Length: 354
Image 1 (cartoon, rainbow, N blue to C red):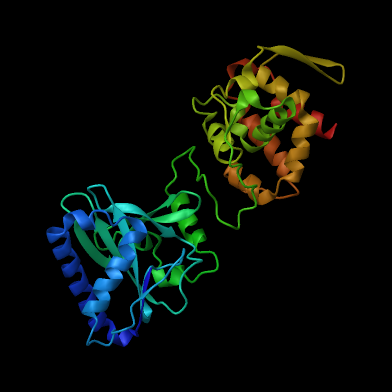
Image 2: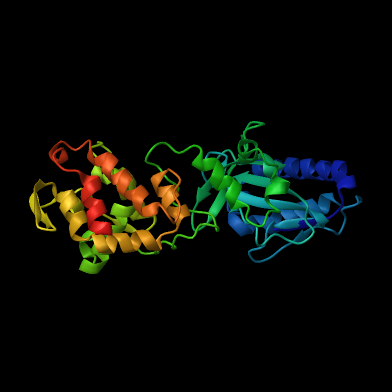
């Protein structure tokens, strides 16, 4: 990382130094392409520092260009005010994954950062723009990170999309929340974000992706019963009723289940006795629910109203969440041809409240 000690009053001079640096780098790229092409990653940072320091002689930035080591952000600093983040790609395009949204390693006192991007594929070329002007989207590796696009049009940054300037977002205690809120508005039915903001209370997903068939019986039962609480649409007849469940298993529980439908429907129909009353020809989905109703209700009671509201896409509260869940299951069940003869709301109410 390169850092410069400067103030905003020197912006014109710094812009001039940056422009000269890019021009000089592109001359090197043309005349010494073999050497420059080997300057991948952190190997480029001292190269840029040396050129910039040479060009800074006789300016207010003389002897102020500093290379920051380690994992700090940005890579170069000038007069402890301006920063330069150096990125490289060996591909013939101008996009790459950038830094973390959280900026926990940002160098103190650096206020203005610029992106210096080296495209090391032939023809080698360097470009530089203000950092916030080239951040187009958010992508996720081990944490939410900016996507850099050196060809990004004005007004197309992630900050334009969330309607919040970069300097305001980066100083927030939880900068990811406005971004999460924005992407949630773009979700299509059945979609959800596979990473959540820090305020979300759901458990962290395992680093290991597991296959459903390798889970123990208790793990399978727990996930199945949670699914019946979180996704009332499972009791309907929509063609995509297992879609949200499949996404949830992968994103929240790190479990891949190739045949989600079989979790509930394997085994055909059956009968169920409640208080000496026999209900016949009950679809397997409902038999599974009835047989495990006590555990399902326990999960329901232990899940916060806010989390349930998010899953159900409708508001609930601690007082009414059991009744609300029964109502949702009953509403969906009316669309099942094989359950037309059953009053699911009445059955569940009797099972739960006795």
